[in-house]
Length: 153
Image (cartoon, rainbow, N blue to C red; front, side, top):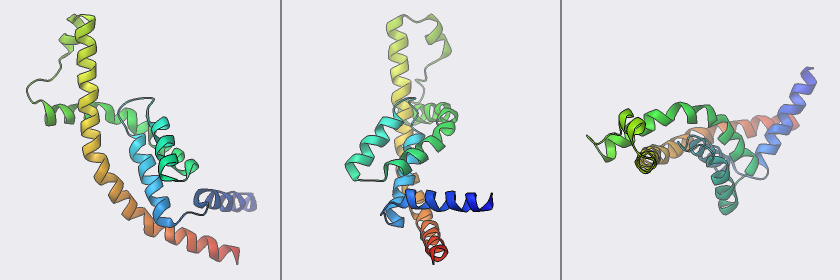
């Protein structure tokens, strides 16, 4: 069993690195995780594919980080909406009454407004988060690469 775990660990490490430097892998994982927290359900996976293809990043690594962040995506929707509302339109928050008593057009307008506020808050937080995660993960991934190289010898 221990042999099976070590074999899987080595394959996973090789799969994640696929000719990519530790800094680039750290950026890939940071982008995947940040995009995975995007407060609009259904968009992060496609966005990760487009970013990975355009920047030539490791597709499995960015998707793995994206999927790891999905539980946070659901937990952070309301805080992102509140932060975005505070940042963009203080005093003009959408109330429950507007959703319950509004016309279809008003409900769609309010939903779009909330989504825009949440996206603005996510963008303000995601950029520094990607930088911090990249800087934090780079030394860790360098160490993982050294350990993996030592095990191969």
